[in-house]
Amino acid sequence: MPTIRETVLTALSARLQPLAALVLRDEVLPERIPPSGLIILRDGQPGEPDVTLSPLRYHYQHRAELEVVVQASTGRASAFDDLIASIGTALEADRTLGGVCDWVEPEAPASVDLPIEGAAALKAAVITVVLHYTTTDPLA
Image 1: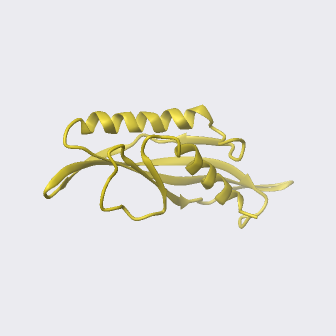
Image 2 (image 1 turned 180 degrees about the vertical axis):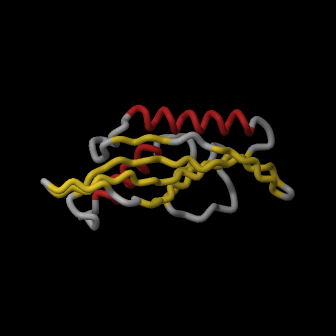
Image 3 (image 1 turned 135 degrees about the horizontal axis):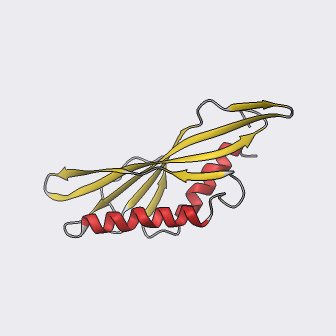
């Protein structure tokens, strides 16, 4: 049986799958970026939980990361903005990821342009997604 952490991360990945961009989880950056863009979900860190004692519960604010990359010779900024907006819309539509998470909150991205020799530049950002969830055991 998967842990709550894994269940939440799997639900986040599934929530992003319908987007136009290719969505991967914990993969290396591929050599080619699809025309629709690329999102790589990094599991991130659960951090130190808040603990309640009666009943015993561990309340996490897990910080997962979405690496978002767009490559285009024209319209790169617009395509990037559209992809970021679609991520926001997808997360806003279900802040509990089907009930497996207490709340999902993305943070604002800080984008960067990355020149590629002999190819169109990449526009990329890391979006931290804070996943609030509760477990009965830090290993559950």
